[in-house]
Length: 265
Image (tube, rainbow, N blue to C red; front, side, top):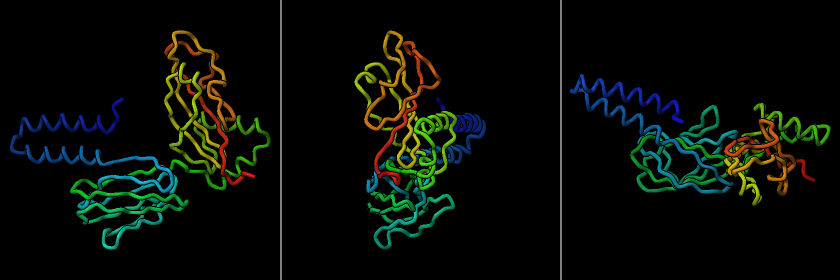
């Protein structure tokens, strides 16, 4: 699907071509404007890391650069003295920095939650980098722990969580995560084309949505066993179907309990 940015760029591009045809003396100015618009979009970058991971990327030594971590705040960015000309944080927790360096350098970044990583940066004359770093190991805060503990029964925990996930009502303290890792059984791999879509993480609980498409030539009965693995608490299909026809697609919402939470005993 073509995104709104590219639709907008196409409108600008076609309008500019018409203008160029009528006013050839302004060719250079318009072409430079178009090049700048497309180049600024290309400089955005998104990666997912485990704590203490390392990113290799190009940064601008002529424009400001930014680094942000979803659901977190950057509190420290360090490099060899003199490398960073300026650094400042934004209200939403991103850090903006500038450099005049001409040789590659490393910056170390730490967030409010304790997530740390490094960036090996190659400076260039280019539009400023906008880097979004997703913490693969992100975990919900104390409020998520309290929410999980407040559910009266095991079944009510699962019922509320699956319903909230389907309706996009994230419980207090839960965070979005790029960790959509699921151990797939041989039968799941054989019968379905699987596409990870989204995930939430609380304290000890992670919820993952997979879109699955029946790749077989016959109808498949939908049951939980296809996605049972260590730590799985529940599997629910949405929309609710008993069978999936060949080529049909449905979402599998999978709830997992994981180790290392505040509630772990």
